[in-house]
Length: 220
Ligand SMILES: [Zn+2]
Image (cartoon, rainbow, N blue to C red; front, side, top):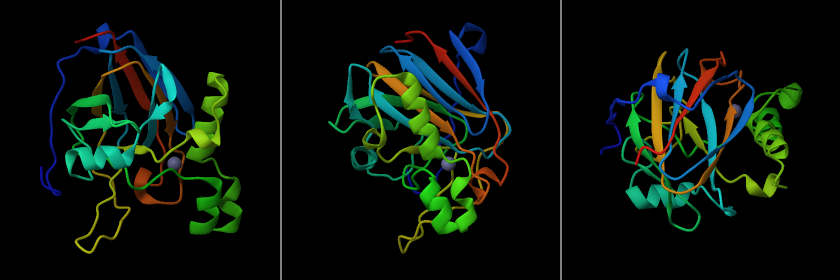
């Protein structure tokens, strides 16, 4: 896989067979438990939405997604079909098995009240942001998780190309209406999502939109 390639792979799974099928509005958080072998799909319903996502070992919540382990494991900074999403203990949490967007980011991080204020304007501090959505969803999940349980995340459908000089650029999206990414759980997994409400940069085309979330039981 080269840095400029986009890996398109469609899924054979039918949404009619899904055991979970929900639409998550922009600005909302969400948690979902997966069993080993479950398949999880995120659909970018209207296109160019950023879906900030974290994963935890469902049996040991101290083991969680690691961008460093994931990048090092595959020798590439972009996520797509075949990427193993690695944990802080170097084990695969999930494997991406289908992807019709072709590239996802794990370098850009999540927006927060603080970053909105620093990047955009003082009065942006009180806008909705992913970090607060993560914390609210974790509070509702009710297992005592908080700020220290939120490591660097994945931004599904977000385009953050890295220049040859190593600069990060938040670019126009490469996704479109109906594009999706699908992954298989390699252990029991807790999924944590903030469907990004960001209005100040092009990650969402300045227009945050809903996503569809589906789960199929034990496919492998
Ligand atoms: Zn965000």
